[in-house]
Length: 227
Ligand SMILES: *Cc1c(COP(=O)(O)O)cnc(C)c1O
Image 1 (tube, rainbow, N blue to C red):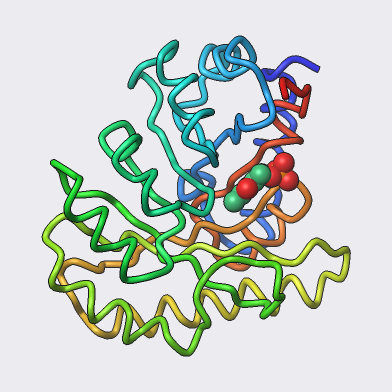
Image 2 (image 1 turned 180 degrees about the vertical axis):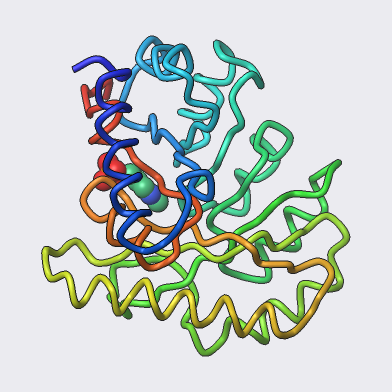
């Protein structure tokens, strides 16, 4: 399927989810996750009108960046190794995987601009998932005050891979509750307006539960493999 057709379908699903939850589709930003696909396919996504691209490895990001430059807005969505920060930090606009102080320190040291970050939270408690324990998030965010190049735009999570709708909702709601707690701290470097949650299989539920950014790979650009 062409990206433009997938996009049309996804936009219509987003509209429906917004209608069901009394929201406006303008509140929801789509990131096309291009980690599985070629530069050409990423270009096709940009041509289809997608403004935001997401990658989860430094090689993938740099390869796509070489071809597409900073025309799209770049989101780094994968877990970030501290030693890789310097390779990508000036290419990305958003980092979705801030999950430890050592990473914050390195980002702050290497960045020449304020980096818009999401604190990644492991709401589901699954061993395999990256992200911070929910209980540690507030203290962590308070500690980020010392870093002038870090701005906490929001929270990010990956829900478990399941069809159990109730479990997905529980997970997304928990992130939203946590967001409200962060907002109540009234920290100028942590407005925390965004919720980055929802992927190909659960973005409609995520939107019903308040997602402002959905990260969609398979359903949007497919997963033709280049590896
Ligand atoms: C791969 C990935 C996505 C997209 O996954 P799909 O199921 O293909 O939509 C979203 N977020 C993160 C963090 C990912 O690693």
